[in-house]
Length: 349
Image 1 (cartoon, one colour):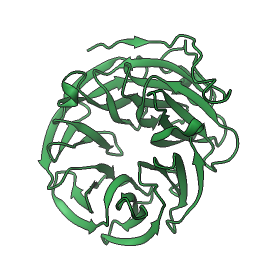
Image 2 (spheres, helix red, strand yellow; image 1 turned 120 degrees about the vertical axis):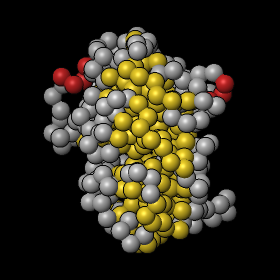
Image 3 (cartoon, rainbow, N blue to C red; image 1 turned 45 degrees about the horizontal axis):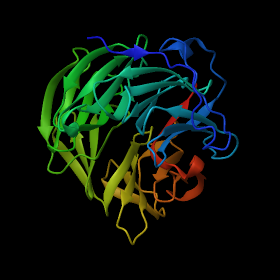
């Protein structure tokens, strides 16, 4: 299966709106052009997607300390998901409008290409070897009532397959060996399992509640499904092995690299603070619980697991917390009061 791939022409976007901030908008290299660049030593970046009231999207490339200079990159429409390449050199941004997938050179601060994925993009994830991006999409027709997972070759920009995976595939989790992709179906209350070698559905199982967030432990033994007021543990065949009660609706989920605990951001109501919760995934017990203002959006974790970054859409910022205590201690506003929509962390080897 082929797809529409195009390098991005030179254009000036958002410069006036962002007060002259640096904008990377020029793209004329190959889809994986940044792969040949020499990685900066110990370079880490926090990637924050946001959108203005007119639907214009940007990607904010910031230092994880939430201080210092930033780079602002315009993307085609509202970012719905971000994933970084394993080497930290590229960011893949799923968007509502346009082709649906933009590729960003992280060090160069510019879009290098766009790929049509057959609909508006939701969450996306990159294979461990960096050769494939999996994009959960809604239908380009019918208001997203049907969707699929687009399998994109990062070297060529070709869409190798479009895999039907439920009514509205939104959340994704990939085993550490890259062999199995789990897709959460927001409308049908179920999980679809994809064999990535065959690019085909290999199984599925039902969930009692809508799967809002998915994660897999570093050893690839358990799937964690965050649903309304519950974090559920399944084995990779769909057998339920445990659960932890939560005090709200989960909006973000990540598992620590050491596999001992998960971090969950919770919406608890209009009149109460959001919560940042850490859960011992071996005992299924809450280990820390801290108020986090109105930061209840998607979250990401630093590569070493020491920091969690959570979006605060109401106050238009991202907050940072120490995962050992769960206590937020710093924040960074989005440019021009844009509404943050997605976040990711990348690091060079």
